[in-house]
Image (cartoon, rainbow, N blue to C red):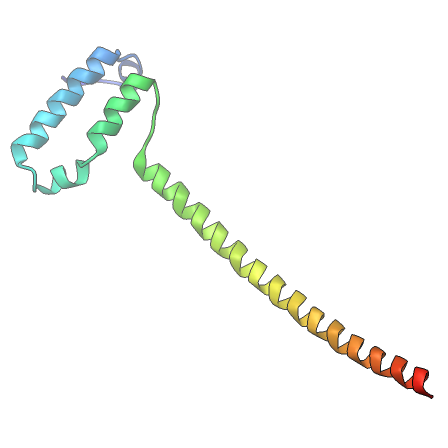
Length: 112
């Protein structure tokens, strides 16, 4: 089965897609379970079947890329928050030192 243009591809029925998917699965199966293609397609046929059944266009590669981008953003945020934490910690330590000085001055005033 050859699809000649994108208009025909967009108009494919679920039954046509199921049929083509079965053909592809059979071709990959002929190569054996340890073939490069079978290894690359592992789990993908299940996703394709779910896409057909649920009228969804899930793509694990795109999802992985999105998750990678989110992880990179979160890593940057963690670094920024760690910097802020260190800044607040330093400010708290400075405030504590200032409090000790003020307590000492108060004690001096009270005992003078």
